[in-house]
Length: 113
Image (cartoon, rainbow, N blue to C red; front, side, top):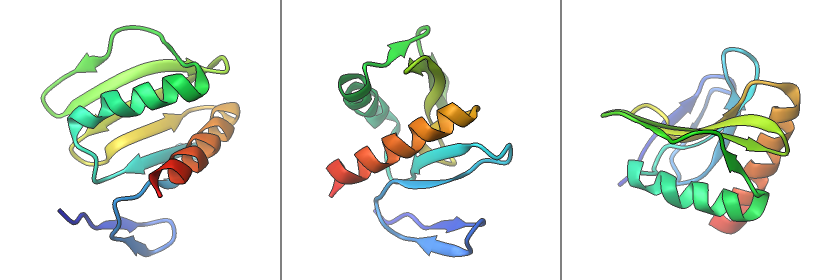
């Protein structure tokens, strides 16, 4: 299945099953994979748990069109989720969190290839 993502920040179209990184409206980073299905979020959380020793703050919120995990990595709150619009997303809301998102993005790109 082919997904098309238009990156409004750069005006580019990405047609690959790849991790992309961009800025949210609040200026912080998000790492997304539009081609991932809802059930794959558990695999992604597991991969990140092994690599970054993440701590789940609470049970995931699971709804019809959204699943969200609130986790801590290196003491920073990170949101890992899936929704109909973004596929799987990993996002931060602090500058330190943005650095972690960059690390996660680079790691996921390295194991995705």
